[in-house]
Length: 94
Image (cartoon, rainbow, N blue to C red; front, side, top):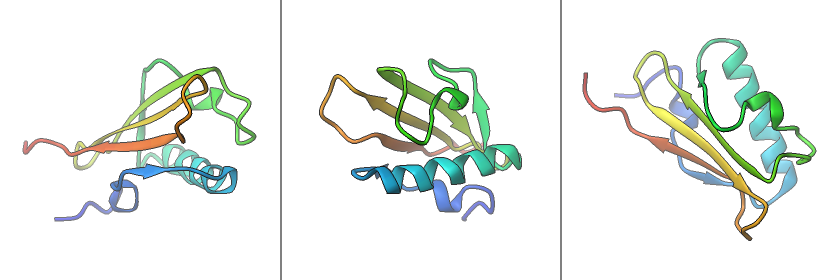
């Protein structure tokens, strides 16, 4: 069964280009502002992640879907040569 809140966000993603990442971050901010995705207290706040990639060296933001319980992590580390990632973690059955 798909969740109306997070269906579009439940795929693992990497962002090799700045344009893809910028579009994703804007969409994520909109979902958080609308309450469709909830930001959890984590290592980095979404507000600290700018579209222009002028970020802290290490980013790890945690999110969750209030309807189905799926959790998400946004990770980036400037010390490693990896593209930023969006990682969903399926909710356990309630």
